[in-house]
Image (tube, rainbow, N blue to C red):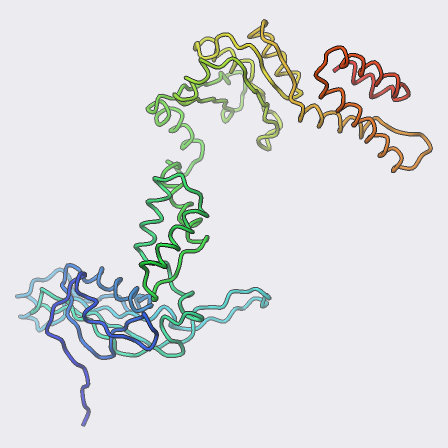
Length: 408
């Protein structure tokens, strides 16, 4: 004769009271749903309660057998046909099954979370009791201890409440991923449960990618999404949009846009000095055209850039031409960083010592660069010109570089 050890509790639990149906486990701070103890859950809250039970008990319950009960019949029809169940679904522990990698093992390979755990949880709903579903654990966990800090917690997904909080912070705040993680770890230490995994950087970055797609990508096609920004989203936020005429090109995919926020527009109207950096090699397209001239003319026509006194630019002849054409009275100065870069490239190409070792030429280039830096940082105008004359005399044998120096 078989004995049924299943125990039933008459209380109908809700999300607010479900913790009362759980018991302490062998792991401090982790609770459990006792084996073969049937509990009743309010029908409208059974999914939320299942999630809460999993997070409180350090288990992720995964659907093992989906519901196959009829859902399109009434209680009267079910009674007439002898059908008792309106819902029946079986869940297995997230560490169910096993996994063996077919690839060669790596030293830092992550351990699989699968370890043949045999735990099952059954959720049932009956036509005669529509107000509640029944939960029961029919098989206990094996090969692992749910909630074990060293070997089990790391296999759990992040709790839903933390995912929700992460999403809110990523969407609404301007904190870095590092600061968000630190703040949430502090909150978990104060109020979190021992059964929940802590936030890591992968959680943040994965969610950030999803949010970026939600907030910024409006179509699978990148150009379609970009045009939605240019034609709809940014104008609605009072952005000033520049669109270049690309009819000269037979390439229908060619485009050129610029945009400025309302804050940027106000700052530009009152500023007198500007830095203009030509960004080169922004894509793999070798036929890109620099629209600096048209962009500056657009800003001038829009009364955003009225009477600039000075531009600081990199060593780009196209930028010089664009500025002088649009604002002929504006002074232009070159960025020291870009000038030094240009000098270094030219020194490497042109400064040679015939018949000497490469190391000797390298030492000479260092001496020349030191003299050039003394010139460029000189504040007294007379001393500045004196150092230029002295530089030409000191290195008069380097004709190629001196020719470049005088022309530029």
